[in-house]
Structures are given as C-alpha cells and as structure tokens.
Length: 153
Image (cartoon, rainbow, N blue to C red):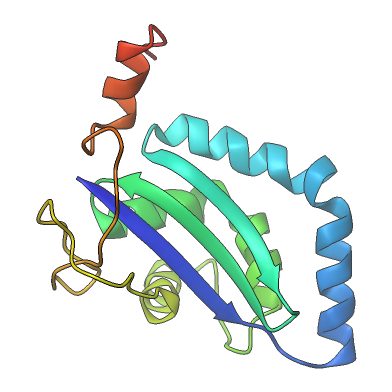
C-alpha cells in the first residue's frame, strides 16, 4: 500500500537559522542529495522524494512510500541521522534524532494529511483513513515496478 509523507516542519525565524538554511541550500546538491538517494535506493520503499523550503518558513520532506509507517520512519532515522539533524536543527521544535520515539513523535506531529480520502484503504500514522494519493501504477510496490522494467534488485 502506498502512503504519502507530507512532513511540514516550521522553521525558526532567527538570523542564525536563516544562515543554516542558506548553508543547507548551498551544500545540498554536493553533499546531502547523494546520501539521501543512497538511503532511498537501499530502502526499496520510496517511489518519489523531495525536500524543499517555502519562504524560509517551512522545510518540507515529501515522499510516496510503502509499508509500515513506523518502520519506514525508523529506517530513515537510522540511515540518515546527519541529514535529519540538519533538518531538525532548523525546526521551531526540539527533536532528538538519536531517540527513536522522539523522532517518531516529531514525524507524526509534522506530517500533514492530503486532502480527500485514500481509495486503496491506506491509513495514516494514527490508523485513520489516509488522504488521497493518486497512483498511475495502481499502488504497485517499488520492487514490483523494478521487476516490470527489468531492474529487479
């Protein structure tokens, strides 16, 4: 079952944090992007992913993934502690990336539900019907899609 992660993290509005945003933007392509891509490929759970900043007020991590929400969150906490430390260092909330339950709680509190209702029975982090997520591939898994295109891992 495919899920949407719409992680919307409010950014602190002080000069030091805005400088951290500029630094993250400057190093993202050369230092962060490859690290994220390696973890995404290793997971074989994520269909699409992106990270962006809106008006220096929010940093967003948006993915389409499959599987258990908590296992997904924990995988990326373990695989990308430095990346999430950078991201949560910008946040208006304190998050100990080394603490699995704190990271899970922050992920749940910052995840925003898509409009509409899932048509495939998908549930959100709290077990309620998830928001709508269109899938051109009828919610096939990453592994199945790779198999269909001849890239079985």
